[in-house]
Image 1 (cartoon, rainbow, N blue to C red):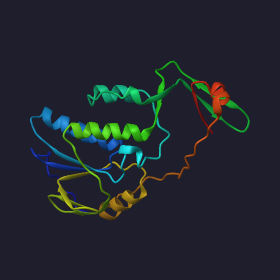
Image 2 (cartoon, one colour):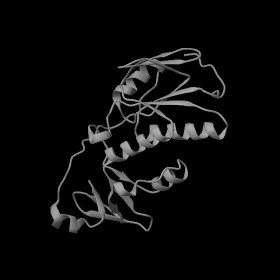
Image 3 (cartoon, helix red, strand yellow):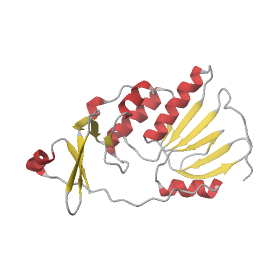
Image 4 (cartoon, one colour):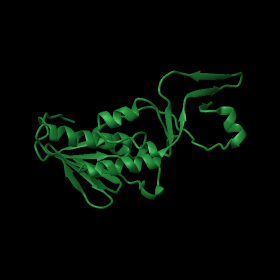
Amino acid sequence: MKQTYLGPLQDGGRVGIIGGGPGGVATAIALKQGARALGREAQVIIIEGKQFAGEQHHNQCVGVLSPPIADLVERDLKIPFPHSLSRSAITGYILHTAQREIILDGETEPSVALRRVQFDAYMLNAARDCGVEILPARVTAFEFHADRVVIYTENTPREVEVVVGAFGMDEGSGVLFENAVGYHPPLALNSVVTKYHPGDEGMITFGNRFGGC
């Protein structure tokens, strides 16, 4: 595909962000704030098919936020970090192997364990408060033109000057970008997330450490 440099995004320029997780939301808020700092206004839309409100859907994640995420959210995005969503503090990790257990403790700030779907909903609402449009829909196709990109969704097509893929390891979105612009998804392993309930005695054994195998 022939690439053409279109210059900086103009005042009133439109940006479509595919994915409403932390990466997409942070990008959207940073774009809005960066444009305003330059005396411009950017029309930013996040297109997200999952419904985080009411915990209808969720992202595949264990829900652990490690430093310096809280500082980045508050300092760079100027959003209060939702400490009220914290379920516990993680001060270290235990790596379980067939032969032994390796305890990894540090002197840095603890990580925060929370329900990721609640954090996703909080961040998406923060983006909305910053003036970002949220479109609850799934993207079905793209059309790239010399001066714009047409994003087709389940609801209605949207035209933007810039499109950002913030879809993590979502295979469907990766295929859409691969077909449209020759994007090559990174090699990755499929993982299975499961829950283990150790009970009160088990939690006492673990303490404030997070375990993995």
